[in-house]
Image (cartoon, rainbow, N blue to C red):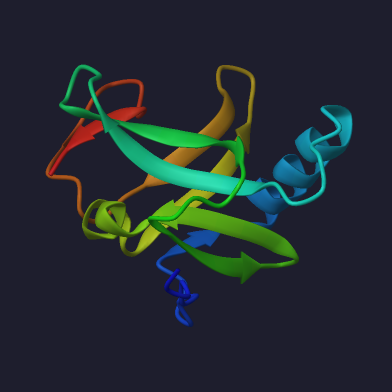
Length: 117
């Protein structure tokens, strides 16, 4: 079995607010040891692609990297859609949740959870 290399440069960034929210969620949901944050895309949504954000184990097609003690997994083929993206946590009167600032998106939907590239 070929060794999977970890990427040294981080293709995405997480703000301090996002890191705090993710660590809180991990503790609340008792995420098992060996799981990391999966960031990716899937077909669908009102603009063509939807973001994937959840906890998972590393898979064969994944690259991995560390951000503030969080292990992050991303399928190698998703990097072209996500390179340079910033994930933030918004806590306001009207909105609460993760926001995705993706420089690769040519269009985004009103809710910000899907995009086209």
